[in-house]
Length: 146
Image (cartoon, rainbow, N blue to C red):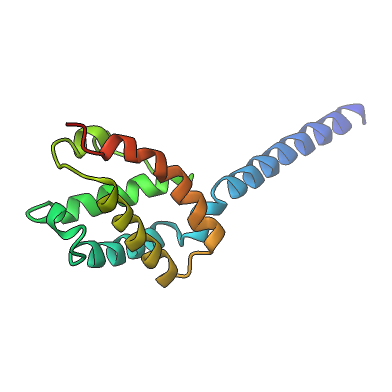
């Protein structure tokens, strides 16, 4: 009888640990889910690039750029920043933007186009702000440093 109680207690502890772990994972990726997971991120990045490639403030930076590769890496990066199940395989931001003479106005224009894409895809405002807060410090790595 005692052995059965110990087994039940051990089983209950294992189940509780598994449920706690699942709950923590659900909370950890809540922001990622608010963006529509990977499919949502792909739509957001596609919509953003539809704008930045025609926006006169940003278009020159994308002439002759490998847009498909950039979009793939940006989806990866956003996914990681949003605690999704992704790995970023791109280069560091500083190296990727070296010599492109990116100024604050161009960076801000890209952010505006990103915000419009997030709005279009129904991302809640508070979720947008969380992503933007994670992206804002990256300006130091993409700005012109001449």
